[in-house]
Picture 1 (tube, rainbow, N blue to C red):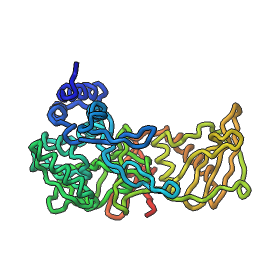
Picture 2: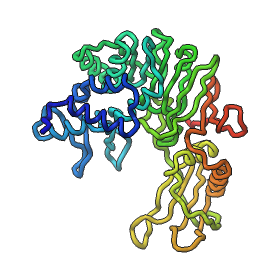
Picture 3: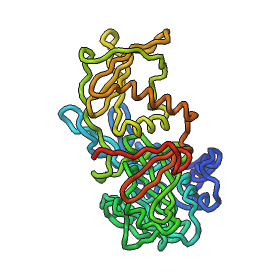
Picture 4: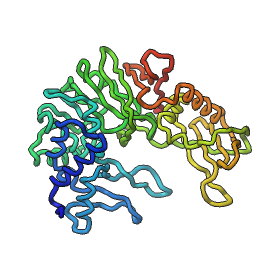
Length: 394
């Protein structure tokens, strides 16, 4: 029987799980995973239940076993709560910081092709677990990590020191990187950004790699691995899919925005034969929709007044354009209502048709080029026919 304190057994079980899933392939990172006591860096986390958020910790007899299971599971435990908007007259509480799932950490670290002697800058210290893996692999003097939250940095500093690790940590805005210690052979961002800060490019060494989660809006985008080639960055998106919490810097953070009301009395009506309405489930297509529209496309289901349940699906943009589709039934034709300055559903259909003509490309066919004044997403080749500028409304 495994005791709760037998963390080496739990670490080995996690290692085996990641190897089986194809998320851990290198002996170096396997050794690091087995060497770092993750529970020492995540002494508590929050779990949402029927009564709201509950704190699980090592110090509570009531939650200790659940904490042990959670901290050594391949999950992303929420480590800090904060205000995430308003819920009526009260502030809505939600995740503000988390510890990334180990499978995502090892996948990213392996994607960076880190070699002995290289210097690595991490954007987003968090709990310090990722920094600990890096320290074990490279040594303290090669690891640099920043976070905008001074309290998180100090907690991470103390816990890392207790494990014998002393990387360079700084409580600064990650958008600016850490110029006083540049250049870096590798830069890894454990937070999402709406566009890649040019400061990171400047601080990357020649042929250096930068791995970042580019999200033009919440959940719209993916990890992209960029290489510094002279005066620009260029690289491809990851073939899989991953998502991080957005950077808390206002300039690079994408929060919720209000869209206008939908009034069928002031709309044009047409039909569509498209039966698949959950376009947001196809993440490369949803990314392409946002690139072609040049702004956020909100979505959801309107209430069915007859049943009180979900009714028509709708899409809307911040300029007041919107569309609704009648619920999918047994027939091949659905009703569409479009209002506002643009015929939104017609434009979405055009993007869908383009995506199909291009062979329904997955993430691995998309790439990104970053220069000081523009960021361009491309398909297949940087100089190919299909390119889109990254537009983000501040």
